[in-house]
Length: 186
Ligand SMILES: Cc1cc2nc3c(=O)[nH]c(=O)nc-3n(C[C@H](O)[C@H](O)[C@H](O)COP(=O)(O)O)c2cc1C
Image (cartoon, rainbow, N blue to C red):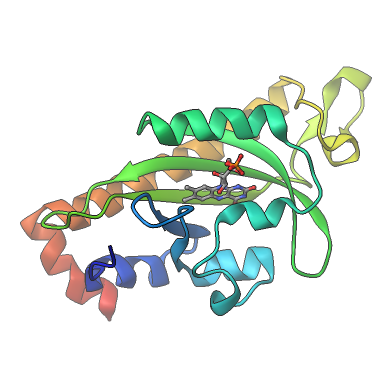
């Protein structure tokens, strides 16, 4: 199934400064169908090396098995949720990817999509258990300590991700959003 993706959805992806990917639930192995500029900057991969692939390619050799099981469950039940996985950029740098997944409903379209909103939080999260800001980036595969400053970082990313999802759904669903197409398209 390869339905046409509405222009207003593509336009919004391009103007949004938050890294975004859109994957199709209805194509084999859920490939990315759109990756915006911010995502390509974050990952270092150009769009042609992202489109058509399942986002797991960013995980490289990292196991991530517990968190991946949660991701699969979330997608299967068409829910939204947040995850943190060890990933690698194209240049080989590892990073902690905090991402939000949410189903996106495209009116008049049979194909079902999942929106991914990704943040590199490697340098923002800190292990407060040690009492001084040891970077969680040193303990890839471990869990992020629920210290205050980590919570602030995570909550701010959650808010950004939810806003993006809501704006995108609004643009897709409402008449006003259809007009906003010309605004976002420039
Ligand atoms: C829209 C979308 C974006 C995703 N983005 C990422 C990502 O940036 N990094 C990552 O490691 N996994 C990402 N995933 C999760 C993987 O694609 C995959 O669903 C996960 O690894 C669990 O499935 P698996 O066990 O078959 O690999 C994303 C999934 C979707 C649907």
